[in-house]
Length: 245
Image 1 (cartoon, rainbow, N blue to C red):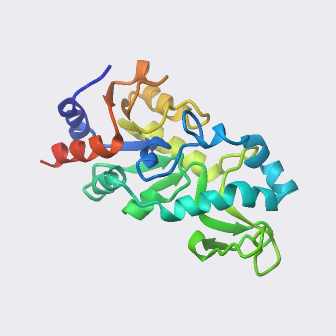
Image 2: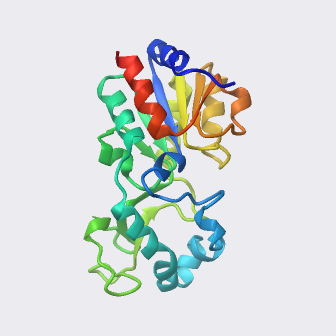
């Protein structure tokens, strides 16, 4: 059911352990297109051809040229929006324990959040497939494809490709936060991609309240305790102002 900002603020004020689960919707307002859904990247290209780990291993030059180069350009230009900054303010004031994000853009950290579990890894980091050396994406220059490490190994983004497992530490930590919180904010995600989709349900099974902030109802809405319907960049700053006021 839809609820008011005032009611949502009451839930947040009463919470002693709030965790946020964020998805692509929170970063759309920063100019980053989603992968799925209307206007998503997968409308224009087949993820199995360009985003599967097998495709990368078979032809890293093609994947870098047609997918990863574009993503690099988009992510380097993106900046945190008011929703990211509102979550950072919540953490600074002790009203947010951690963020579990399905996003790979690094914008939560750029906004100032410290406790961020990157469920799908991060495109903000580039790693070598041989020596595992890591470097920030800003230090990567695509003078040749695929880009190579100083050791000669092929460089790749430190994010999860199709066909790869969620990092074990990220999965375990996300589950721990989910079963220990008393309020989970679900922001900018339809909560349909597993295993991340299981986290709100895991929290709900441990008696946590679920508050959605999404433009439209989702498959999670029937079990959530309230839906703030609208854009996260507009609603989250207003919500934080009511909690802090």
